[in-house]
Image 1 (tube, rainbow, N blue to C red):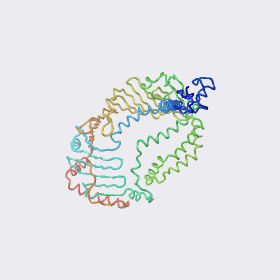
Image 2 (image 1 turned 45 degrees about the horizontal axis):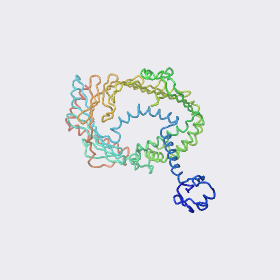
Image 3 (image 1 turned 90 degrees about the vertical axis):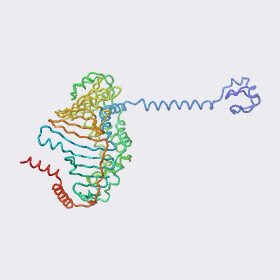
Image 4 (image 1 turned 30 degrees about the vertical axis):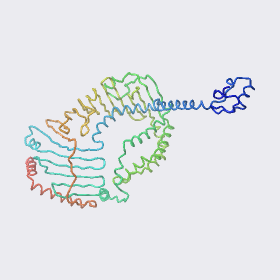
Length: 513
């Protein structure tokens, strides 16, 4: 006979199946004989052993489907936000981040400013001999800075500075051998009259939030907007044409690329209940947000000296919670309407309008190699960046109201030492060329026949002040006045002994008569 549970062959007289352990009600032979039905045709009991892999497999399928849905099948309210974020990131945030990258964590450069003015007589000779020097070497915690006025290849006036955010050291080696050193907290207390003992710079290094933490906080509050989007306040219409006849955007490039084309249209019109939900969630999120509270508390402590009335985090939280209903009503009275036209990639046109205010508009137009990114706010603010792009190299114009900047062969993948992209710029008769130099970058400005050049090296030679330390932590206003008098006397002595300064003085006074 066969086991009714697993189908294995069973010896007559067995009480249990050797294969699966199934217990027979009677001995195997007697059970078969009594029923008169072949054992293999008995109705089997539940096969729990074989069901286990089926259940596990089903769970895997369901889990995979849930993961796919949550990560790839985004609901429409997410698209409303994400398509706008993608457009703004591509048009503005990414270029700014690339431009800012060389100075993001550290600034280390020596700047040399020179000028030439042919045909200006004695002024031309003076400019040929003159240079202004600024050396900077700093990160988020420390900064060393040197300045010098150079004439006839000699640094006739110099100044040195170093700070770690807690103290400051200053010196002028050309005047004397002293280093004026002060505790910034004590100096600020003395000058402002704020003697709060809790004021401290101990946490200054913690005021810088990491990029990861910034993104976490931004997402936390961005999700609040997503949370109030529903099928009732967000309508979605397919194949809608964009009509610029009601827009304040005047860029022909933007109009040609977008006008009359079909997009998916999103319209968000929040109700008072939506605002109440938003304010409630905002209060709850602020209350639980230890990251933001810790950072703000340190920042408020740091700013207490300059802004003693700056509200605490708990005071802000209390106002948000107490004024939620009033704020909701006031926001409702604005009659906000937020419209977005988008393709599958990103938003192409954004319009935010209220009852009594001008509309805020953004356009992100692309037509082949031609791109136009525009922002307008009624008749008072109009910005447009219109350009053609070949790889990372762009040529075009950037306008702000009635002012226009043209640029040519600007490589947006290659920021210079000071951030500006390499290339040519021109506006209102003033030209700027950003070009590579020997281990440096030259910023050359031409205006009205004069040429001004700023050379920025790829690294700095700045040095910290050294000399006899004078503690100025507790200086009063009178003490500073006396210090100014002392330095003035030192400068007069320098004038009497330095032939370069005497030559400059003669030229300056000679031009007055």
